[in-house]
Image (cartoon, rainbow, N blue to C red; front, side, top):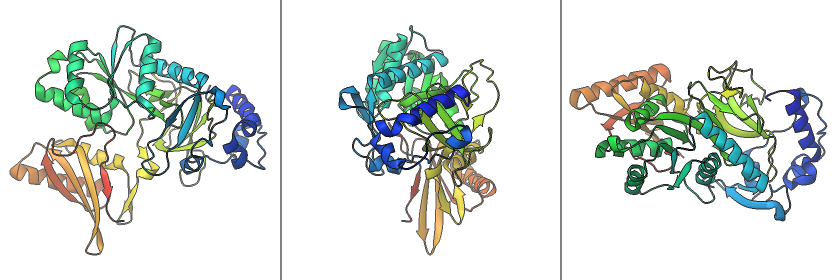
Length: 410
């Protein structure tokens, strides 16, 4: 539906009752005229940000009576109070419908065996992957995270054909399968990867070592969870379900809408969510709307693969640095592997950026790769760093998301 009149009508209907249903928006929109007549009017409505959702803890976002809430999910709360999201039975069903679409887009069929490694419980990931697989009619194998020995054993014994994982854990599994020489005993054909940004070199390593086609799945706890969009077989962006969400791209500094094709911050308005509807929610994820039709033939619009998050940025020596730029540097040096870790310290009155990266090179070749990484970083990002090469496998691997930038200055 995109920016159609029908979508605007749905949003207008939602705005007409949002204050009656949601205590959160009753307070936030107090005194505002929500009787919009155009997209320009809609863009005058204030954004909703995560810090506001935290302040609504525990159930300030709930927009239906208790009797209609069948489940809650929550963000991790690692950077403050968790965000609690209530779901109605319709919300749960809608989420499963979207997730089933993701599986179908990725070529998964009822004949597949879906190996699910993301966590269960308050986190949205595991149960979302499972509900979509069950709705499709595929065999769900609800492993959850951890116990890599058991994971690989089950892949072999049950003949798992689809892997669902974060990119960090997919890499850990791929490396372990390779180390054990188990590739010929593993039947994985596809992998649905989500939860964090990952670079081209990491993507190529996982695909090569697993022998699987990779699909980027998108979502966030506040907006159902993973499953609101996924890449297709053509690997030219992420299709999102515009009959469930309305998506804008804004300039993160000014809040102005950006033209299609320009990179900015993703803002989402839910179109059907009952338990905790969100209006113009700032995700802090960075991407762009890809104009035109996709070669795969899907009618659903596309955003590009995420380039990072606005809150992932660090400023060093006056230069703004995003993880995507570090990925680009590491990817540009053939002898460097995909994994890196950046340490930022303030020593002797100045900022010091140390980039640890993995490589198979040793001796003078290792020193040469360090110089190459240092020169590439200076050229592409604009600052001088301390490059430190370490053997492949030395940097930590994670069963969840990997933290690759550590700012020790504060």
